[in-house]
Length: 228
Image (cartoon, rainbow, N blue to C red; front, side):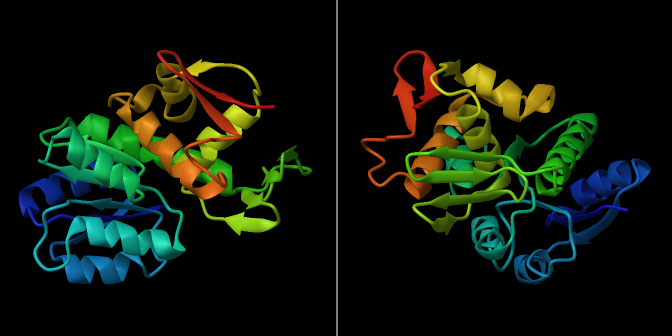
């Protein structure tokens, strides 16, 4: 049974989320305080973490940063903060998704299922070994390992998926909408700003000079392509 951690100080919302998740077969724990939530979130006991940003004690942004130091599990932000800057900041520090309150419980569960399914597919070992090589960049799709000039770089699940998708289709221009569909699927209801945020983060990790990228090129007004 998959384990979900809800870090949410509003008990009514947390219990509603828990009830729907349990109906769908997920073991779910609730923590209302940030410090306790951080301890559990970094314990390695959970398959996915759902975190509010406004918490007593340790804030949601800090929890996400700490998770990302050692774990690649999906992290979903659930927050009443609906400004683009809040969404971009959450995604920039490592969240995989951002859901604004109020929201549909059915949509909430759909996103949980989607992220868990994709994470399981990515971390599982595929038969054989496929390696994508390009100008010092090495992507091993069997081990989910990315190296630049022999040095391993750590990507989040969504960063990895975007990179693999683009690298698997070199010299083809993809719109932000197409990338959203390819990586997030039909379950994602957000805007395309998340793609720009993730591309920015990928470049910071794999490009020697993110301003002059040699791997992922921006096609202004259209989208992105992976340079062969």
